[in-house]
Image (cartoon, rainbow, N blue to C red; front, side):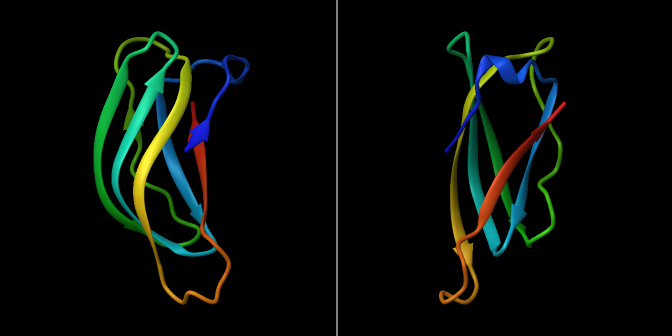
Length: 89
C-alpha cells in the first residue's frame, strides 16, 4: 500500500515504478479522497528500473488517498525487497 496525502496535489494520471527486484502485479486499486475506488486490472511483470503503463484517472484532477495492490516479488530471495513508488501528474 502507498499512502498519499492531499498536500501531494491532484492527479490525472499515475504509474508505478519498480526498483531492486522484479514485481508481478495482479491488481491495483486507487482510493480517492471522496471515497471512490478505481479498480485497475494490471497483469504485468515489471523489472527493476521499469514502470507500469500510464493509468488514466476518471474525471478531472483527483486527490488520491491511497493505492493498494496485489503483487508477487520475483527473483532471488536473498536480494533486497522490491521498492514500488507511485508517480503521478
